[in-house]
Structure formats: C-alpha cells, structure tokens
Image 1: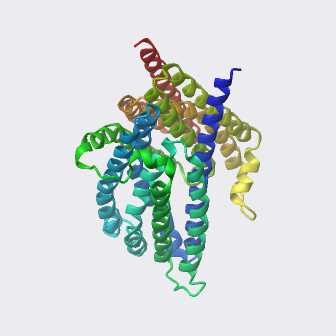
Image 2: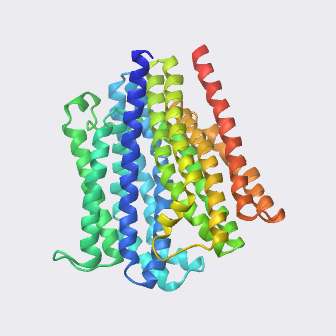
Image 3: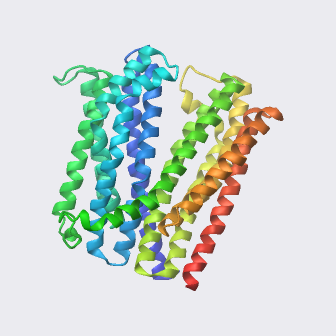
Length: 451
C-alpha cells in the first residue's frame, strides 16, 4: 500500500467520520425535542408526528439544493482558484435567502394546509403555532448550511463536528427550559421548542460567520468582500447543479410516503413491523448519506485540481467505506433481529410471534437493500462531484415511479405477498438503480481519464 493511498484513505475517513457524527448529533437534537413535546398531552403527541414529518420533509428538500455549494467550492479549492471560493460562498448565501421565501410562506400557512388535507383542527392548530415560531429559524438554518458547505469543502470538518456538539447542548438546554418553563423561563409548550430551535440556529450561524471571518487561512478567499453583481453566473451554476438533487430528494421522500401508505393498507400489524425496521434503517442511512456527501466533495476537489486518476480512487475509497459499514449493519439485522425489536419496543410491549417472525424477515431483506442503497447513494454523491446530477435524478425518478412503485403494488397485493413483497420490490428497484449509477460512474471516470 503506497503512501498516497494511505493519504487518500485517511482524508476520506476523516471527512466521512466527521460528517456522520455531525448528522447523528443533529438527529439526536430532533429526537429529544420531539420526545419533550410528546409528553405535553395526547393532542400534542398526535401533533408531534405531523410536526416531525413536516419539518423533516421541508428541511431536507430546502437544504438539498445547497449541497451543490460544497461541490462547486470543492472544485475551486482543488484548482486553487481561491478568490472564486469567496464568490461561490456569497452566491450560496444569496441562493439560501431565495429558498427561505417559499419555505416560510408554507410554514406560516401550515394550519390551513393541514385542515385542507383532512387533519384534526386541534392538531392543525398546534402545528400552526409551532411552525409560525419556527419560521424565524429558517433563514438562520439555511445560511448556516451554506457556511457549513464552505467549511467542509476547504477541509475544516472538525469545526462542523464541534458545532454539532455545541448546538446539541444549546438545543436540549433551551428546549427543556422553554417547553416546561424551567430556570425562570416561561412555560411555552410546543412554541417553546420552536423558539429554542430558532435561538440555536441564530447562535450557530453567528458562530459560523465568526469562524469564517476571523480564520486567517480564509483571508485569501475574500469571503466578505461583497461582489454579488459580478458573479451571478456562479448562482446559476450552483442552481443548475442543485435543482436535480432537490427533485431527486423530493421524489424519494414522496415514494417513501406512498410505500408507507401501501403498507398501511395491509393492516396495523404490518405497519408496526415496518415502523420498527424503518427506524433502524433511517438511523443507519445517516452515515451513508454523510459518506456520499464526502465523496461529492473529495471527487470535486480532485477534479478541480486536475488530478484525474485520484477521482476514481476517491470514488472507490468512499464506496469501500460505505459497503463495509453496510455489511456490519447487515450482520446485526440477520443475527440479532429479535434483540433489535426488544430494544425498540422497550419493557412491557411485545409483538405477537407472527409479527416478530415477519419483522425478522423484513430486517434481513432491509439489510440486503441497505447494501445496494449504500452503493447507490455513494456513487450518486461521486457523480455530483463531477457535476453530473441530472442523470441520477432522471434515473431515480424513472425507476422509482415506473418500476419500483408498480412492483410494490404487484408483489404486495396482486400476488398477495404482503409486506415481504413490498420490501422485495424495493430491493429490486434499488439493485437496478445502483447498477445503472455504478456503470454511469465508470463511464464518467473513463471519459475524464481519456480526455
């Protein structure tokens, strides 16, 4: 093993590990907040399900376009076009500002939207109070994500990890104080959680801006020498790379919703079994998404530097790390499904033997899906580093809506295979998508090497 290979592995691992831990801390922040408001009463418990799902959907869709900032800055950083880094940074903040507008409008009208969708008026009212207060957090979070993408693209991932720990502490402390009225603060209930997130978001944004402003290594980037008007072409570039990512995210979230509806048609037992497996799956997908983002940044840096052969090596290294992680997860799913079920349900709750057996089978199938999903997500990230975002988006939408969703219905209901059939159909779709995206990655690598 050569020194350069060791360097590539070390660099890849450091970025992927920092991103994975950062995403994990963010998940813990959201989980603790939801747990706090869920204890305020039955109506709030019901509303918390809508709050968490709506917030996650809006947040993921809105920030997905901003992932392109890290890719474009990574190109400039690899090519040592340092002043361009500052220009992309500023245009990224402008794009985040534009994204804020529709998100805030939706959140301020969420009560009416939920009532129009047939939700309970009391539950809709609780959501309306929450999202009106949470609207103050949106500019802070989107601007912070823009700053975060810059920091990651110039290999300062330790600061991102540090800030994730700090914001977790701030968020939990403020949430506890404002939701329940401790430490001399008013008891605000659900609104208190939204205000806690808002304060946390603005504090984190100020910390990121201070880090960017006072870090001596960033002086040559001219981050705060305003030149918006001269660089609108970079805004167009960020948007052109980012909108397919957003559409792909939206398509994936919608397909997840439709699949969940189908499982709900099967009955509450199947839905309960799927819920247990899904929670573990979503937890384990977090590191895979982080590795995918790391792949996009590192491949982008290599392309910007003109290090053509390193493009393939970074892509292979991130894939190896992701698949190794997924194999560990598969081992847990295959050999310890009953332990995972008991951990999720806790004391005093049990599935009947039939549902335990079903959940165990779904764990094994989901582990298989996770392996191919890791390959799919990481290679999609690698392609983003080459500015190739439209092909994965089109491939994903076609396979999801023309093959996977129809197969889910066919296997689940026409052939009466139930939850096992729906899960198997998802595996088929994931394998097809992973194969096509991997072939696309090899083709793109060979194209860059040959030209």
